[in-house]
Image (cartoon, rainbow, N blue to C red; front, side):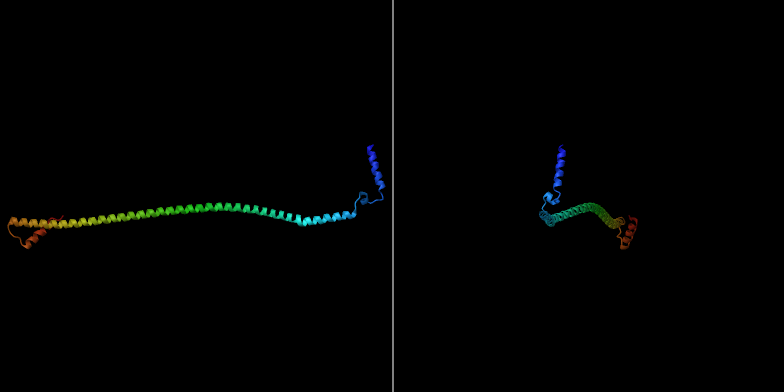
Length: 184
């Protein structure tokens, strides 16, 4: 029953307002409505121009900076990988150069040592040769002295045994015979 009363009430109200326009039925003032719409549109344009536009522009710039930052991070990561590879290559090259320098230093030291050994060997050979020459010279001198002394002894002995004084020719002859027999 309640529903019926409500429905009848609505129909009576609709039937009694047949001569009025919709705006009059709802109590809408068209001048105020137009003013409110114009105010809303004006505020919307001002906000779009002064607030939303700059905010959207700022957000777009921020979005671009973030994208650039991500790209830069990727580039930095790639550069870091390249730098690591280059560092490893440089270290490898430096180690190779160091090994080469050490090898060259060893070879140089061995060459210097070999040269010093050769020089010492040559010097030792030279000393031996000089000592040999000095020994040969001394032997020759001793032989010559021995020949003279033996010749003198023979001459003295012959003079004493024979009792005769030997002439220079006799002495020369005896010295030659003695020298040929005493050859050492």
